[in-house]
Amino acid sequence: MRCVICKHGEVQPGMTTVTLERETLTLVVKGVPARVCSECGEEYVDDQVATHLLALVEQAAQAGVQVDIRRFVAA
Image 1: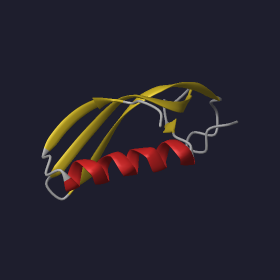
Image 2: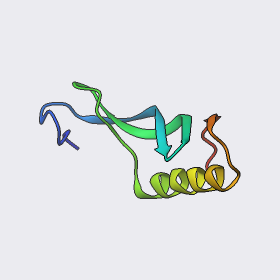
Image 3: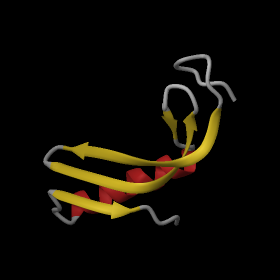
Image 4: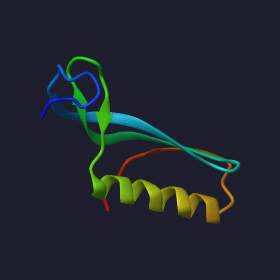
């Protein structure tokens, strides 16, 4: 698949770090599976991964977390 941002690079399987913010919460998740552009570095996560990340931020917000750094673990 070609990158939709730069239109030149091919996206390849890789890993990324995602930072999510919600009100006073900042959640950093490392080792997130993604597709990464070989040219510009743009990162894409699939729907299942995005849904999992949103669930993590919801759980952290409900627990009253302000800052958390986690390693991605598939559901």
